[in-house]
Image (cartoon, rainbow, N blue to C red; front, side, top):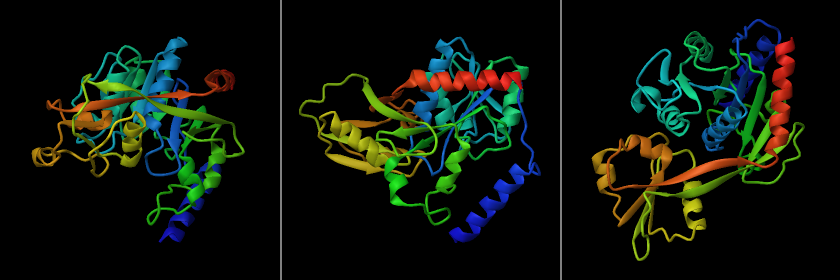
Length: 308
């Protein structure tokens, strides 16, 4: 089944290169953060990190996201820059999380067409720099700088394309990017500049005394084992680990069966808990080694794009 999918990708790529499939431009520059596989490469914390850093640089970022599994359709403004103004169900869990984490720093807009979402943001004057979340395959929108995130374990495991595997595109597609961010690993000897990304836990909220308590860890994310490993690396003994499907909507019966004195989950899962009490949340942030070098590359590229 992967062979027809590979052929479709090859034809699509040629049609974009030939100009048959059109790419639309926004008035403001676009930085894309995406990957070659299905989820679990740290795109969301990386997008948050970049938005924070670009805001510190004097930009007014706007995150453009698809809003995966949201109940709404079309373009929806999730945040004008001061936190969520749209329920998470209509925003999608990841855009809602980004809107919350980026309150006071960046706006968030979702839409099936990131170009139309960008036009809406421009008409509303929400910002002057777009961050395209999970946008590497969304080639309808011109981007000025492409960052591809990579899980080194998946990179070395092989290249099994959809629908039987986890790869959206072959490895050689990395050549479309200007930089690669490698999650928690070493360098891969890629043909483009590489930067190490570290996902660091910065605490459990609310602060809880865990001594002598039975801990249940649960998550509905692409790679829940990474979450469990992160907790154990903090010296926590996890009595029970429960994995749900990615973007799972928790029912009362799901939660009632978890057990444990303390129940810890991820920030993305906490969005879907809808503020139900009795749960603790592990907060994680991304940092990029040699970020100054990456930022210099981005700023140079943006300056050159504005001159063309």
